Image (cartoon, one colour):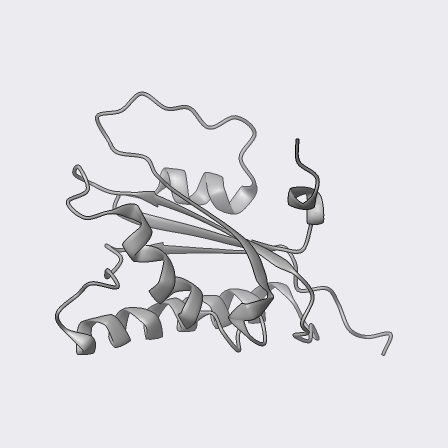
Length: 144
């Protein structure tokens, strides 16, 4: 199928505070997952014409830029995001071999060197902002 493109990497930027896996409100959690799904689908349609999903190994990077110091744990925002992207960024989250999640709190001194266009877009937005990148580069399979 010569008309198919690779979907990866795909980068998604959302404004808002992510809902934790520990949220007491399943309605809020499901609404957040739908926002992630919708933003991912929108970005996918914007960038790729005919990309198909498959079961190749993937990595997911999540950067959270909160407006205030984060109250919860960074690991609790991961699963709702990864679950929301199922069927939109990958067939099944079993394809995800690596997840990196990091928060960049406003009072901390941090610097972004050579951001992608979408990451630069996220950095220019008023927090809170979530940046998500799904990629198929297997560099993480080489380690010391």
